[in-house]
Image (cartoon, rainbow, N blue to C red; front, side, top):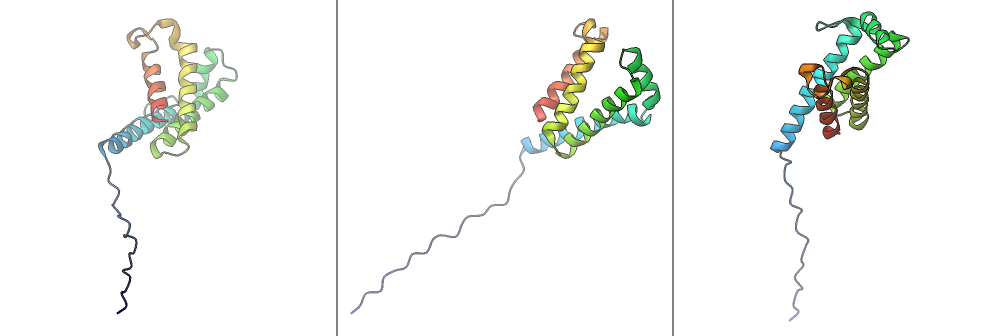
Length: 139
């Protein structure tokens, strides 16, 4: 009598549906809130919405700080905030989006808030540091 060899087939791969964690939801919340608020802040400079001054008036402010031509620097700053914020919100080019926001905040700290110390109550760097650190952490 001939004995049949038992065939062993590989087990089917175990598939699981991806599950979101509190970490995923927390990161999404930070991305959306922070990113959209920064985009709104840039839109204030660019378009004059949400109570902003718009590009022409923001340009005058930049010129008063010594940036000439002020309108061009206002455009660069506004676009950095607007596009950087949108990039973080949707997760598109995240390192570049974060770098744009960090660059604007470093510039703000050096030119505007740095001489006033740390705390926002005296015009200090507190707010700019928070924005830069959140952008860096998301990246």
